[in-house]
Length: 80
Image 1 (spheres, rainbow, N blue to C red):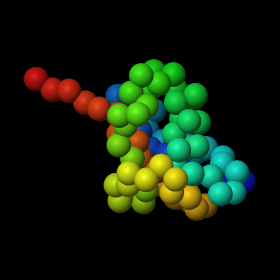
Image 2 (image 1 turned 180 degrees about the horizontal axis):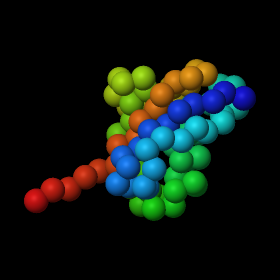
Image 3 (image 1 turned 60 degrees about the vertical axis):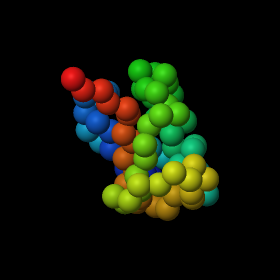
Image 4 (image 1 turned 180 degrees about the vertical axis):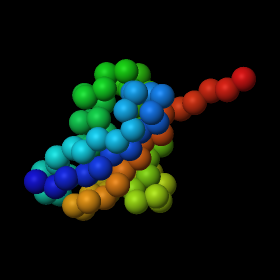
């Protein structure tokens, strides 16, 4: 099992950081699925969330995550 830190906008889920366990070879896509299962409020914006791994934005959902990677998901925001 790999442990990954995931960071979210605090406003989106009222939490700043969580740790998720993924099987070896887990991908960004599989982590995204775990995150949205844990926080259904994100389900409607799941496909629109930007992601970064270790402070680098990525757009390849097949990226294999490594032990200790810090993944941040950024839900879409609106302003006025």
